[in-house]
Amino acid sequence: MNKLYSKYIGIVLLMILFSCEEKIKAEVTPIQIAFIADAHFQDIYAHFEDADYKGIENPETVNFVNIRTMQAQLQSTRIFNENYFAFIEALDDIVARGIKYVALPGGDFSDDGQPVHVKGLRKILDRYSKKHGILFFATTGNHDPVKPFTQEAGKTDFLGLGGKEQIITSSVKNLKDTAEGQLKPIITSEIKKWGL
Image (tube, rainbow, N blue to C red; front, top):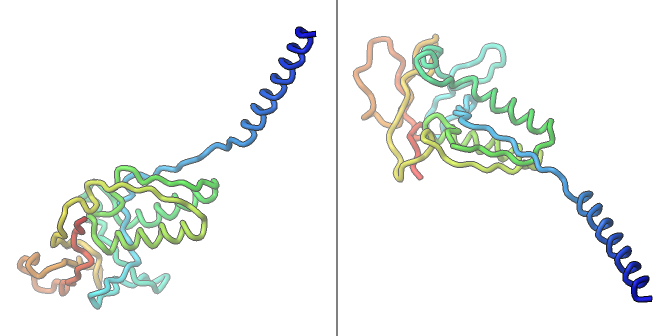
C-alpha cells in the first residue's frame, strides 16, 4: 500500500510541476529594447525665447527653420540638419515595431549641450512617451552638458537671409571683427553650452 501510495503521490507531484512549468512559460513575454546612440539632435524648428530671430523661411512649407550651412557639415565629423528627421524616423520605426523601451546610451543627443536643442529633444521624447507609452533611458556624453557650469558659446555657420552665414552666439564677447555686409549676429542664451 505504501508503494502504491508513494507512486500516486509521485505522479501527482510530476503533474503539478509540469502544469506550473507550462503556466510560467505562458506568462513570460520577451522585452524589446531599442538603442539610439549619438543622435546629435538639432531642433531645427526651435525658436529662441530671448531673441527676435525666427530662422530662415522654407519657401515650400512657409515654416521657419534654424539650420546650419552645408559648409558646416562638410567641415565637421557629423551632420546637423538631417539629424532631426533621422531621429523622428527612428522613433516612428520603434513605434511601428511595438517597442516600449528606448535607450540613448553614451549620450551625445545634442550638438554641444545647447538649451535650444536639449529642450527640443525633451519635447519630442515627451510626445512619444505620452502618445505611445515609450520609456526613455538616457545618459550624457561628451557633447552634452558635462561641466558644472554653463559656458558661453556660439556658432558662426547658421544659414541666414540670402543664404549668408548667420552668427548665433550667447555673448557679444564671443564676437570677433565682423566683415562688411555680414548679417547682424543674434545674441541668445539658448545657444550656450549648458552645465549640469
